[in-house]
Length: 180
Image 1 (spheres, rainbow, N blue to C red):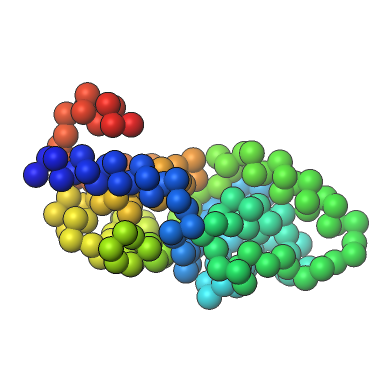
Image 2 (image 1 turned 60 degrees about the horizontal axis):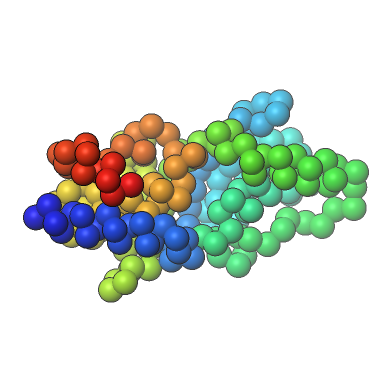
């Protein structure tokens, strides 16, 4: 049974190198901006941010950052830039976004729902305040799976502590570190 889990860890490592297998359907993010904290949401390929600039312009540095960071996992519509604005704020937004992309500790994913295109099947994953879920049989047994482990690896700097935790697997620490 442990060898099955080792195989899942190896598969997760391969999956993490292929983020395009993941399709983010919904995500809620806490973003610690330069001046304030913000909540950003993606629902049905539409972005929303609670910052004033987004409400005025329909685009902001926070959304632009997430579009860059999560690009391989977003639909074409969600990757589209917001309204084209010819305004001095655009330069500032682009500069902030470029900086934020390298400061992922500003971002904390609060919740997400995604489809994972696995080797054999597609799976539905979710992250909520209580942790991960996946509809695959491995997750039901181990409370983790290659799909969750791949997302944990890809999104690690943006995940809250509960989402970085391994499943309910008691594996000797030296074995886990050898596979990392």
